[in-house]
Image (cartoon, rainbow, N blue to C red; front, side, top):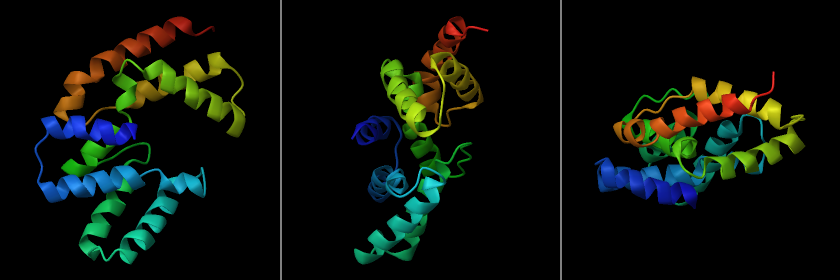
Length: 163
């Protein structure tokens, strides 16, 4: 639901057609659905689920292909090609430059600690610095409104790391 709310925010600042907005919203709703089957390569599982689901609802092949590409574009490292792909990638990682970064980051830390054997908070902070430094926003809206706080998070996290 957070991603849909974030999508609405982006759509107030980035003008696309009504049809593209609908496809983007569907992409947002479906981009992490693959996690229901696998944590590894969840995007591939997600496009399989999306393809089956959207076919049942008689979406056109063209629209299904666009939604599948939206899902695939969120795979890290993100390499979006179209405007819709750039928007969904920025929405997917919007929290990196928001005030609730630490709340969401803590939830991810707890998940990874259980599922990936992550040892401690210091290891997590190192991982986050590496991730944040490699990440880039793609839309003018995110660059202007999210990048500055993301850069601040990098500095804050570096200050927390014990060598």
